[in-house]
Image 1 (cartoon, rainbow, N blue to C red):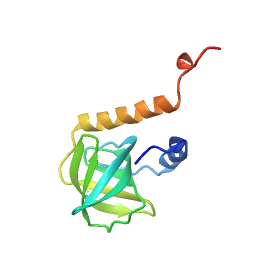
Image 2 (cartoon, rainbow, N blue to C red):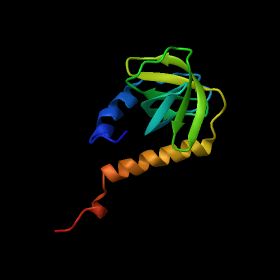
Image 3 (cartoon, rainbow, N blue to C red):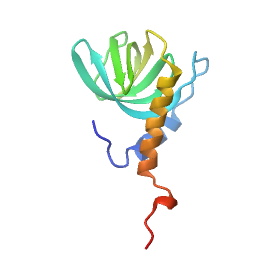
Length: 128
């Protein structure tokens, strides 16, 4: 799944406008990276919108039932999870094992790298 021009501009307001849930077991880190969700042998395209050591918020046009056992694959992450809620094009998953903080940092770094490419600084602009 490739990146669509302007995708960050479209997704960022949605991520910032989401209400913050109190009492989370771990802090969510906003990311925007491609992923795969597997149910059995079938894989579906998705994007990870936020990530913590205990779960994630994903965007996918595929529908998953609450309670479904899935596997999330994203970069160096390959982890089993249960779908705990779903919206029209989002779903929340809770991981069956805790995710390492280094994996979260790597996904945040991937997001930052793509943002830097999409929004070059004045230093990298060509001089006429």
